[in-house]
Length: 65
Image (cartoon, rainbow, N blue to C red; front, side):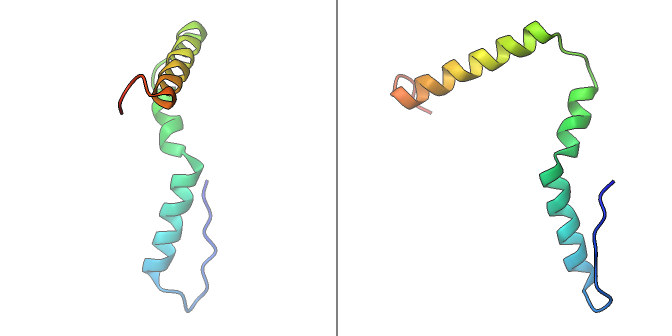
């Protein structure tokens, strides 16, 4: 649960902005999406390897991004 410390004189818009930033940094939405369906460990590993290969090819200039 996210808790925002706000002062009495602080504007509600500023408090909401702080909450949104904290929510984004906590990556709660990504966790919820990943928990919706089970992904086998072998599939996770394969996706990580494919992503690493893609990043390497981008860095070497073989693929234009």
